[in-house]
Structures are given as structure tokens and as C-alpha cells.
Image (cartoon, rainbow, N blue to C red; front, side):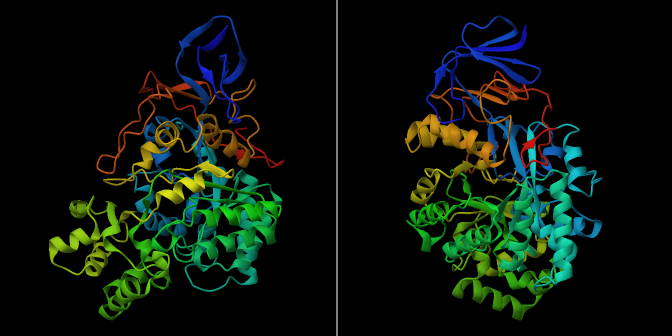
Length: 535
């Protein structure tokens, strides 16, 4: 007798094929039968009117610490996420040494928060993955963060790596891939990853390719220079032979309105040239990052303390303000800053809580102070720890990119802060509710494929991402007529509707709409063959 039998559902198996009626039996954490008229089980769920699909795979998650610090992880599992990919944007916590850990914690506190009494007992990717295996809500894979490698070896200087330094980064990367990382990420608008040359990235990606991994870059621009920046990433893939995953693939800011088709054409050409290219997006218009990220890149050389010193100097402040407001700095992707698009999402300093949910322009009007001064003073008072929402997207671009055959889903979700982006709780139900049912941008079976089987193929998962006998029972039951995101910009921490059951490795983490106390997730490791699994 199986542990679990799900009856009456329409099965969307993750391949993009039309749905079919079948019962699904689960035993020992795996799917043991997909058929009709299966024998009784110890528990039966009548799923009449619901869709049964593989669990959703979040290809761009910033839960690196929060998945451990707040292990219920309701924001993600309540959406149907059963696997997320960590280590994004070139900055994370493995491999790492003590000085770099302190610097990274400070730099990306706006992404990960600063959990109290947190045990950073690991230094390697293997150690971090072992820590995940001690108890997490959903499965997790990990990318080696190129910026962290560079900080450990080169520091925060704006210069090419020496041959010896490059060799050391390659050594660290090799060990990390052998430890089980599925690829490498970059944050090429963040210190110090931004200081890497194209040639340096090519040499690192050659190693990633040798181990069957993929490269997931946050590129140098998503604004005025977006297409050139995408072109550089395609060049890296071409020269290195590495698979390329264009993460949070957007065309934002005024100069890119209506230009989503240009990106799609570039991807099609790369695919036609034989490159292995995929993308992920989130189904919202605003982006999210740290307030410090929109500073000109030259201000970041030397690290956080040097940057803060520059923000205290009146002459330097004037130079920065001119570059941001009149010229268009690289921190704002080559575009002149529009202060009414910069909304404060979270602060490190509790004394600044009144700024959360307000734009820099609103704060400036309230205080009777130039917007640039409000910006500088926030950064100083918050020790660079402020997170923001950046309202710079275009709906037509979002729709164009999500319809492409390379597309997968990625939340880019920051879970901390007073008002985080609603994608933290709503990305996957928003795809199913708004872009499938309401707008018809995607067909339901195709959308499920985007969120399950297709990312599983990118990750080279051998037994996840499909509803298939022998596969791990990472499963979601949702109501196609009711599923929707309820998280809003004013109230972002709200659970989605229409997703009553979520199973991770056969264990219910959402049961009849409620979070259980189960922590059945596992670390997903790249194997010697290049495939990824939990063993």
C-alpha cells in the first residue's frame, strides 16, 4: 500500500504536453505509479477539479541565509516552489574565508538580512550544502559566486586579475564545482565582480563548461547598454563553450521600451549558432536591488568603507549627483536617474523605518531637501544596507520575453525588509493566474513546462521536474480557475490562493492550504557526470 494516492486530478507532467486524467501514487518520497484505478493508499487526496504538476523551480533565488534562518520558508513553498537555485548575482557565502564573509555580509545585508546568532560554520560549497541538508523546506541547488571568488583573491580593486590570481580563482572554482555547485553566477554591476574583464570571465567559464555546469550572469547593464551587455555574455558563452542562462532577462528603463523583441532575436541567433542559452524572468515590472547598487561603479572601488567616505565628501557628492542626474551613471544602467522610480523596500537601521514604502522623490519633497542628498544620507545612515524597488519595467517586454522557448521562471526574491517586492510571495501563482488565465499570454501546459521541466533540463536534473514514475515526488496541486497571487506592493507578505497542496520529496509542506512543520528539502549537487541530484 502506497503512502499517498492523489486521485481525480488533471496531470500536467511538465513536458508541455496536454493534461491527462490519472491517479498518482507516492511511496518513499518518489512517484511509484501514474495510472488509473490504482489501489488504495494510507492517505488519499481527492483532487477533482485540480491540476497536478511537478513542483516549481525558482531559477533565481536570494534565500541563501533565509532558507536556514527561517526554515518554514512559507513565502516560497506556499507558491509551489519545491527547488530553488541559490548563489545568485555573484555574491554569496561559499566558498569563503573570514574577512570576505564579513565584507559580503555587510554588502548584501539588504538581500539576506543579518540573522541573529547565525552559525557560519562552513567555508566551502560542500560545507554549505551539508548545512542545507540539516533541514530545509524545499530543495536547493547552488551557483559559485564569481564576485566572492574575486574578493577572496583580488580584493575590491578595479584592475584585471594577474595570471597568478586568475589561477587561484580557477582553483577555488574547480573545488566548488567538485563540491557539487551546478554552475557559476556573476554580478557585473556589483563590487567586485564588475571589475572582471571579458577575458577573465571566459577563462572561468571554460572551467564551468568542463564540469557540465552553466553560467548565470547578472550582466553589466539592463538599461541603455542592455543589448551590448547581453552580447558580451553571448560572447563569453561562445568563446568558453559554456552553457549560458540569462537570469532576470529584462529590457528595462526608458530607452528599452518595446525592445524585448531585440533581445529575443539575439537569443534566437545564439541558439541558431549552436549555443546553449536559456533565460528566466519574473512576471512584474519593478525590479529590486540595493540602494547602493545604483551609485556609479567607481565609487565602490576599495570596498564599503571607502565608498562611505566618498559619500561624506561634499565635492565627491556633487560629482556623483551630476553623473546620476545629468549624465546617466552605470549604476543606473546608463540612464539618468528618476527619483520617483526608487522606492525604499527595507532598511537595516530601525530609525529609518519611516522611509520604507516611500520613493526618494517623496522623501525629498517631505523634507524639503534635494533628492540626491536624501539618497546619500540614507546610504550613510543605513551603512549601505538599504534595499529598494526600482519601477522601470515595460509590460510588452515582459510578455515578449516570457513567451520565448528559452524561458523559465525566477523570482529574484528578496525575502527581508519592511516591504519586500511582492514577487517574494507571488511569482509562480502570478504566472498561472494573471499570464495564463486572465491574459492568455501562455497556455497552461506550456507555462507549467516553463516552470518545471524546462528548468530541470537546464539544471540537468535526472529525477525531478516531471510527473513520472521513479521521479522524486516534488508535486503541486493547484486550482486553475482560482490560483492567483495576493501579495501586493503595499502588503507583500500574503500567501497565494488556489494552491492547497505542495509536496517536497513526497512530504506535504502545504497541506489543505496550511504550512506544516516538515523540512524535507535536500541539497542538490552536481555529480561527476554533470547531472544534478540529491545524492
